Image 1 (cartoon, rainbow, N blue to C red):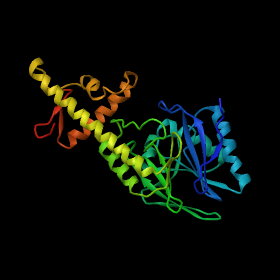
Image 2 (cartoon, one colour):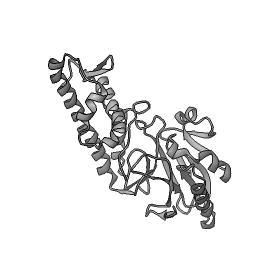
Image 3 (cartoon, one colour):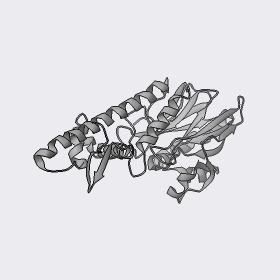
Image 4 (cartoon, helix red, strand yellow):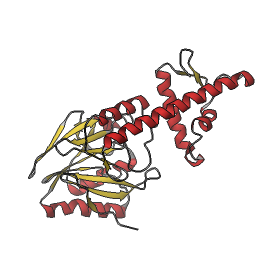
Amino acid sequence: MIRPRAVARGARFVEAFAARTPTLPPATHTNSYALGGREVLLVEPATPYEDERRAWLAWARGLASQGRTVVAIALTHHHPDHVGGARFFAAELGVPVWAHAEAAPRLSDVPIARRLADGDVVRLDGPEPMAVRVLHTPGHAPDHLCFFDEAGGTLIAGDMVAGVGTILIDPREGDMAVYLAQLERLAALGARVALPAHGEPIDAPEALFRRYVAHRLGRERQVLAALGAAAGAAGATGATGATLEELLPVAYADTPRLLWPLARLSLEAHLLKLAREGRAEQREGRWRQAAEGGA
């Protein structure tokens, strides 16, 4: 096994550290980032594993030998593969944890010292002072934050996109329409590089953000087609609409069966978006096209 290590990413005053976490496949690690030339903000205290924590702490403490001082740990959002070490690392380093207000009720065991809001600016002193703009980007999670070094063009993207795999929108706390709107917002930033929580840095990230939107809208068309096919079959079966289980093999026919449990969540997120737009409706656990909706 290759041990995680600090890696220079080519971005201004940014280092990365990949630690093994209980994340969704195909990812196996979550990237943490150190931002700042003298004062440092650590983003993503991710790992819950003891061996990975020791390596992570060695990295964080080693910043001092570079003349850098950690001032806080910041969370992109509350999911376990992003906060598994939050309380532990904050205590070991003696620094506060910063996060969005929506994270606090979801992390009762992690003291949130500063509640970050959209538009806040975190100023980090150094040979070239860094002003990091906080972006509240819900959709994947209600408390999701991105961090943007505007001068350097570097975006800490969390789980908005990934360098490996895709992003799950779980309807229990995610919102597909909001997620797509936030992707459009990120695409308009003009970032030079996006640093995701999973995978390698993403050059020219605007193109990737727009590909994510196009992919989701393409899937939405497949969901609508599946609803249309269910309507066509209704005459023969007498059923009105279709269940998620009946729609899944049609809407996600191009997806390996192994991934269908996750695809089912995405399917429901798409259907809820279509329902809010008046293009689908649910009755007694069955989905169908809304009367005013298009095919």
